[in-house]
Length: 157
Image (tube, rainbow, N blue to C red; front, side):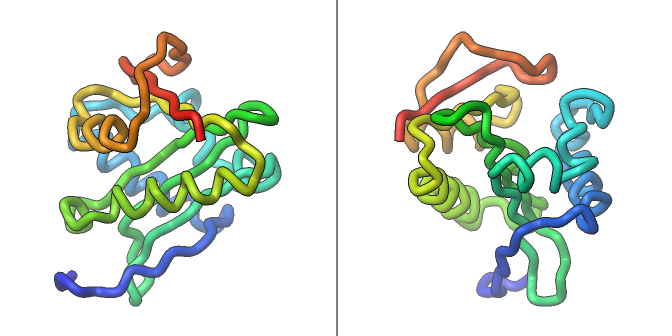
C-alpha cells in the first residue's frame, strides 16, 4: 500500500463476516489477546443482526482493490447510548491518521442518529487506541462488561 493510496469506506454486510473476523482476530493475536467468537466477538459472526438491524453502523475500510484494511462499528445500547466496537486496522494502515479520521466520522454519525453518549471498552495493551480515545475526550468509566477488556470509556456528544 502506498502512502497516498485511496481508502474506500463502505457499509458491511454478512458477506463480509469472514474477512472481518480474519482482520480482527489477527490484530487481537498480534497484541496477545484471544479472539472469542462464542462471546465477545459474536457480533462479527452476524453483522447485519448485531449492527444494521439494530439501527447501528458497521463500516469497512478497503483499498481500491477491495483488500480489507479496517473495521469499525456503532452498536446501539439504548435510545441515547451507542457503543463503539471493533475499531481495528491492518498493520499497513496504522500510523496514517485513519484511527483519528474513523473515530471522528463515527462521532459525527452517532449525533444525527440521536445518541447522546458513546461508550467503548478496550484493552490497555492497545496503547495507540487508548491514547486516541483520551485525545478525543473520552473519560474513564467503571462500567465494564467484556472480559477481554480492562478499560472502559465514555464520551458525551
